[in-house]
Amino acid sequence: MKGILTLQHKLGPIFHIFFICMLAACSAPTAFSTPAPQISPAPTASNTPQPTNSPEPTQTPIPVITDIPVQPVMGLPQGTNGYPWWNDAVFYEIFVRSFADSNGDGIGDFNGLASRLDYLNDGDPSTNTDLGINGIWLMPIHPSPSYHGYDVVDYYDVNPEYGTLDDFKNLVKEAHKRGIKITIDWVLNHTSTQNQWFIESQNPQSPFRNWYLWSTSNPGSERWHVAKNGDYYYGIFDQAMPDLNYDNPEVKAEMKKVVKFWLEDIGVDGFRLDAARHIFEEGANIEN
Image (tube, rainbow, N blue to C red):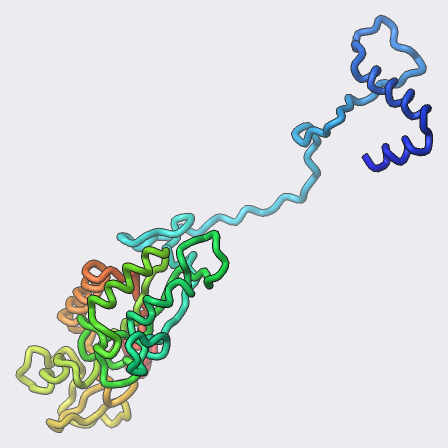
């Protein structure tokens, strides 16, 4: 179009005559008994180009990569193309203790986190004042004698310094309103020595005895620790973190109950499995 305007400016009246002739030629009937010899057949022209009539440019064929079939986890929301929902999620990891304090005791808590959800995602896609994440990974939230929480006292409760189970349920509800899913750190390889299961397992006659790995003599490894009763128990990380015995069907059954409790009763969306590679050791192979 710019070229036409420049030509019009240079040629003036001659251009108008030429342009009118072109339009007349385009609109004139195409059936002639004898075509004028001095006029060459011209391609059909249009003032407005029609993309659909333009020939497709020649392209080098792109090899087709077949998708690998994925078996999604049943019972959980799905993501795009049949992948699990977390395949599409952007997660924000939070250590509750240090994130937001709602009551001024110097310790972060669930209510403090709930009050800051709009900073993470306000649920309105038209705004640009939040981070836009859609998944939260919470570091351990269970009762624990340590500040980090990786030695669990009770898998069916939350750390009272962070609030109550009702406070946590409210956090999950408020997060879901904004399209944010909640996953929690699940420390399944070991418990705290203050866990009631371990306390009872120190009695050789207890039904919990086989929930942990015990020896009446010192196996001669730093991963074995002596208990108050003189027996030795296995704990790969620390003497305060005895390993659970997953060769015991009762342990696996109990942990399935824990999963069901948090998914169905509390409403979390998933778990980050802590120390999963240490659940089953095979001889000297401690990272299975």
